[in-house]
Length: 356
Ligand SMILES: [Mg+2]
Image 1 (cartoon, rainbow, N blue to C red):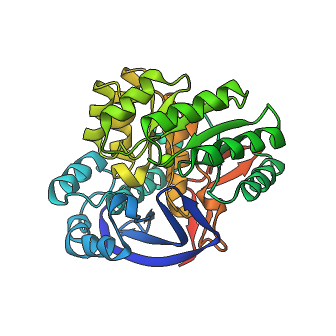
Image 2: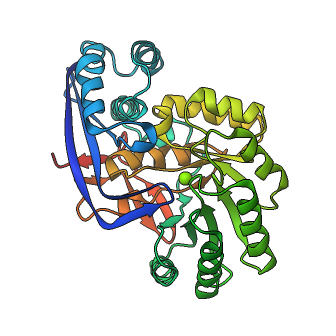
């Protein structure tokens, strides 16, 4: 099987609600779909979601595709993914979401060629995973109502954004805990918004008042490694690195330096499934559990995260909720939500159908 055509199709998807975290607010999300056609008539789909977090835009993704990636792919055997990944990493620096979109399209073809879903090709440890659903930053009463609404849809795990104002964060989280009861998991994500002192004060206060926090994600700025290491050392709640864990090299460094208790791997940050496999192996050997998270990903991209999360034992956490956020997605299949879990499609490859 050889790739005979590669196309990039950018679209702007409208969110149901503007989404705010400590470092930005967005109303639409750029998703660039990649379509790889082969001489056996199989078609592989992938999707890049460029984001300010990875310093990418729709334009940079299209530029990387048109000037480098497309030419590297035409005529190649798509199932030789480790070889193609090495060539791409060698020829194109940065551009992780563009690489992730191409890499997942190659896995889609691998799965379709084997008539097997990706989560099974990758090892198939489990066939579903519990996911959190994110409560974005808003006034406390709006966040409490949002949390109740998520729980009413059957989800059992909330990821509450914080990091702007410690006192408001404490009030909001206590309000959410009171509203949803003790049986719902609450994890926090400060998106780099705290100092060491603020992070410790928020967690100590919440723990004293019985908020029962599962974990705190990226309390301090990504570049201050020792601040994060200090929060991890002093905090009674597990600390997860997200913005600090970008590339494979970042992930290895933070594992070796014992900077965080857990890592949030996102395919768009690290450049796809192949690189995520490597980071997850480092983490597992160091006894550091992994979360698979997502950007503003349509199901076209998020499905790859669901398949990945289900494939590996060390992925104990999933934050794979972005496909819920769009007014209209252009993708069907891939994964479905049921009783708080996200379940990968049993169809071959990523199991997505794209209306483009
Ligand atoms: Mg995060």
